[in-house]
Amino acid sequence: MAEKPRVLIVEDEPDVAELERLAFEKEGFRVETVDSAARALERLQSLTPDLIILDLMLPDRDGLEILKFLRFRKDLTHVPVIVVSARGEEVDRVLGFELGADDYVVKPFSPRELVLRAKAVLKRLKPPEKSVIIRYGPITLYEEEFRVEVEGREVKLTPMEFRLLATLISSPGRVFSREVLLDQIWGYQYQGYARTVDTHVKRLRKKLGPAAELIETVWGVGYRARALNA
Ligand code: CA
Image 1: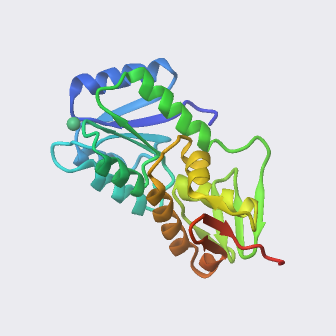
Image 2: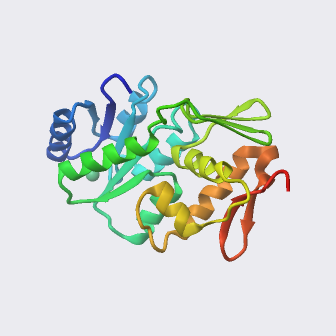
């Protein structure tokens, strides 16, 4: 990202939106704010931001619906989303991750903390310095371009699905426990969110189509990419 990263803030409380804007601008982001789900969806027709900050409690729709929409829109599925919510309940948190949120922040929070989280998310997704291409059976993964092909056809993955696939196929045959995957991919110790890994693997397999069976479940342990020449 040579240019300033562009963040879209979806937040209906003007004071909160303004604090977030200031915090992001101070750290060199370009910021746009919208105050409803409808305006967010409208703006996303033409804008592909580097990051979306998404409040869950919007006046017109639940933010989770926007998240779902983003994950189904092929051109937006790769954009990381940090969900912001006054609802700290486990169910929302889990649902947020299962729908593909990259991080989840509970209100009230300091805008500075939000920016730090945003930077962490972007850093995790940053391509390596050197171009890395992983070839694994019918799958080719271009790390730098954030692109995956199966039998030469492009497959659109979310940031987390992409990292999950990259992790597994980098070490074929190695079994990764859910805890290790949570730690390496989500970047935090999400104890008790093992289901999030299962959901992502399920979606990943679906998208991989003919290559789905290469991602194996190791019962009671976790997942692995099948060792191909064994
Ligand atoms: Ca709100």
